[in-house]
Length: 372
Ligand code: CTP
Image 1 (tube, helix red, strand yellow):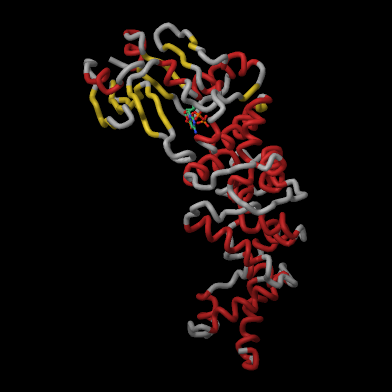
Image 2 (image 1 turned 90 degrees about the horizontal axis):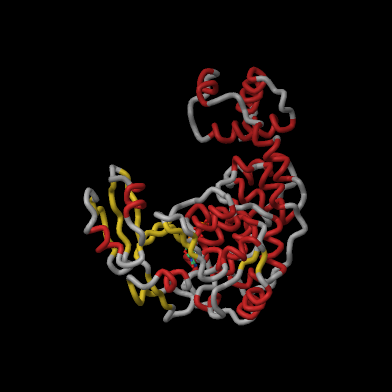
């Protein structure tokens, strides 16, 4: 049996969530969520030719292998938020499909599609909202339960060109005036990553102007006057953490940054206070930094120094290496670093220096002991 046989044989299997929305919007989907109306673990136990790889009874989810392919299947479930802003708890597994979809974030994400009949099940007018490009929460407590939904809303608005419906915008504004900072910032970080990786100036404008940024800081932040997405776009291949550029312009204190993310932010802060009055100082300051820190520096200072470094200075490097120095009779020592630094300074003044000229300069530098 393969998954298509399964879809055709049973009438209690549904595609749910983002995938149904994406089918209707005609957008490619990032992942396909399959749900059984009922208990998925029990359902899969009774299937022929189905190997159960893993089960999570607390969530009612099961991983199966069919025809050598792995699939995750969920049970319909109800959830509650006993601790607002934190992970929900499952209160019922195997509930009705309707109860499963109405626990979700926006109507556009609360659609289901029967895998056998292809029928779209729409309890919440999600199809109309897709048609009208509206993001509507399913109940008034939605943002209080889970404030990451505010970031999700901005993500979907950015990705699909949708906007919040009027009542949902009012609920969002109300929550943002009274944020409960005791929330799960791990989830918040995940949503910020996924939203800001879209690299949109418009999303950042909304993030600041609509005060969504208040979710991650209690400080007052102004929108920088800069085409941030354009600058990121120019150096896209060198940037792994697009999202962090936007978030570091606001505040990262509440987020649990990993080692490289922390380095990016720390280096950015340090760069703001370093004297960068020569090309040599620029190279020395920037060469150990990630591109993200340089972009942040540029947005903050607007002095074109990071651009000059990225476009030109970082390609200017001495051609000679340790072996070359050995060959002109200089035994390896700490002096090498000083010599390379000196050659770099000269090369930045005159990028056309040849390798032979570099070696001559190295010899001269070595002879002139006052410099050492
Ligand atoms: N969901 C929710 N509240 C959240 C996160 C998710 O109600 N805070 C629900 C939505 O119904 C969503 C589904 O869980 O469609 C799956 O979540 P996820 O994979 O994060 O969302 P997608 O809608 O698939 O978004 P993306 O396309 O960005 O993956």
